[in-house]
Image (cartoon, rainbow, N blue to C red; front, side, top):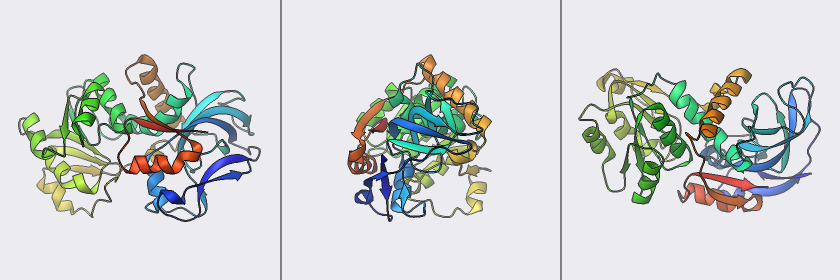
Amino acid sequence: MAKTVRIHAPGDASALTVEDVPVDAPGAGEVRIRHMACGLNFIDVYQRDGLYPLAMPTALGMEASGVVKAVGEGVSHLSVGDRVAYASAPPGAYCEERVMPAAQVCPLPDGIGFEEGAAMMLKGLTVEYLFHRTTPLKAGDTVLFHAAAGGVGLIACQWAKSEGITLIGTAGSDEKCALALAHGATHCINYATEDFAERVKELTDGKGVDVVMDAVGKSTWEGSISCLKPLGMMISFGNASGSVDPVPLQTLAAGGSLKLTRPTLFTHIAEHETCQEMARHLFQKVESGAVKITIGQRFALEEVQQAHRALEGRETTGQTVLLP
């Protein structure tokens, strides 16, 4: 039996329960992992509250790190005792131990701690595809990145700096702006006191940015579109403030032949080799020191309701982990 966080119906944080769940032996293509730490992400909130519907009851959590306890038939890239980390479907990472498909489980280098490993996989692999697999980016390009002091944002600030890319961040307080700047953002705009679209135009001499990376959604959508230069790319990869309304195609034409995409990490990591390649790239960034993983909050597994409330209340900075 392993303590596992589950929900029996969509709801607020009070819907989260910690239950004892049996853990079977791994089947073909599976591994059994004893978790050392589990990461929290906004997708967990979307699944919990029903925005992303799941069959009920369901376990939650999309990333974790730990040690391989057993390996199923046909798994060749992992062995018992290996240190591993992953971001992967199906949900179920909020637990002490689980059996799961092995293809997206990645060997974790010895130089990266378990808490770092758990906290960085979903967010770090997201940054990897944003900067390297969504639209061509090169040194000297300019990116507008919303929620720059959040878990994905702080990794993105460092990643952009390491690639020679100008990153203009936004955040909701002067303290969070200072944090983004300390992590490599070139500029950071406090959207609580400034119109970020107007400020972006000032910072770019009226030209706009090459790319907007936006996980906030509804509340930043119109301003974000107005920040793009002609032929710019709008990457909407989350909806913390609510889903974006349907977009008339003419809006993209009027902005100057703009491009729009709504990617997800799980499309990018669906193939085993691609997932492992992305993970190696992320690990290289962390081991080189170009990207440092900041654990802002730690909660015991039994404190999962408190952890979700802090995440939803935008009371967190950096990464948050649950400790089984």
